[in-house]
Amino acid sequence: MSYRLRIDIHDYWHPGTGRGKGSQLDALTHRGADGLPRLPGRTVRGLLRDAVHRWERFGGYPEVGEPCVCDQLFGPYGQPDENAEDAANSGRTWPGLLRFSDARLPATDSAAILGADHRDALIAGLYRSHFSTRIEHTTGTADENTLRGIELVVPLTLYADIDLVGTARYRTLESRWPDLLQAALPLVRAVGAHRSRGLGRATLTLEETA
Image (cartoon, rainbow, N blue to C red; front, side, top):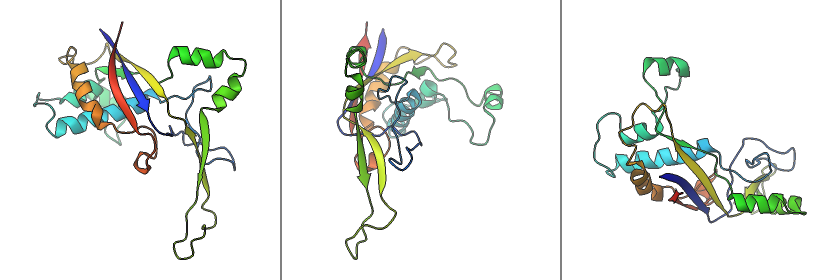
C-alpha cells in the first residue's frame, strides 16, 4: 500500500528561500521551475519529524527501546560540528525509513494552469505581495527604514509522495509507520515561515493511493 501526504493550507503562507527581489521584496517564496508553488521535501520532513518527536516524547507511543520511533522513521540528528560522512561511517547517523517528495499542486491542476493560454496571469494570481512596517508607539507613526515586503502564496492544497528508503537501517516499523505518522499529524498546525505570526495555518492528513 502506498501513501501520500495531503496538506490543506487555509491561509496565506510563505515557503521562504532566503532570497529577495532587489528593492521590491525582501523575501521571495520557493517555487518550482514551472513557476508553481512548492513546499520542499526537506521542509515537509522537518515538520513531520518535529511532530513525531513531540508526540512520542509526551506519551503518544510506548517505549520501543533504542533508537526511538522518531529516529527510526527519520534518522537521528547529526552532530552539528561533525562531518556527515564521518558520522555515517561511525554509525552515529543513518538513513531513516521515510523519504518525502516536494509538496506540489495536484497534477490535474498544474496541467490546467500550465496549459492555459493565459498561464502567466494564472501563475501570478497564486502570489501576493505583503508589506508591513514598525509603528512607533509614542507617536503612532511608522519608523523610518522598517518597511518590509514579503511574497505570500494563496491558500491551496498540496500533495507530497512518501517512499520507503531501501537503505534504512531500522525496518521494524515498516508496517506500522502510517498509523504512527497519522497520530502525530494533528501537532502540525501550520507550514512555512512566520507560522507564529499567523501565516500558513494548515491541516495535514495521510491518504492511501492506488
